[in-house]
Length: 111
Image 1 (cartoon, helix red, strand yellow):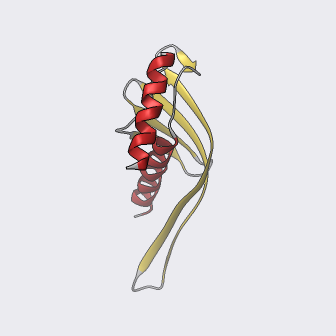
Image 2 (cartoon, rainbow, N blue to C red; image 1 turned 90 degrees about the horizontal axis):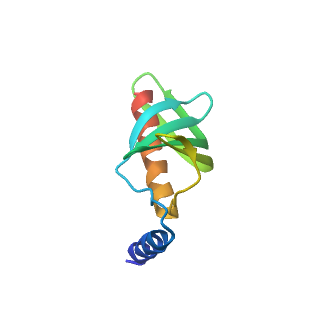
């Protein structure tokens, strides 16, 4: 409930400022696991997300397992049809959702 109130307050504040609020659904357009950069599509915007993470796949011949964790988001650049923009609001709850989307995509690529 608290997160919903925070998100609602963020949206209301952004509406007053005239800046668009970035919300899901999110779609991974590209993922560079070597350089820890993901391009995430959200509506008409594309987010370039630089992150720190750890991920590995291991096994013993009979079973295999993988561990995926995005530890931090270092930078988010937002692009619209005109190029990079700083005219947006990205609530912290949405950053958590983006991290989950990135972790899921990494896990799928490791299968």
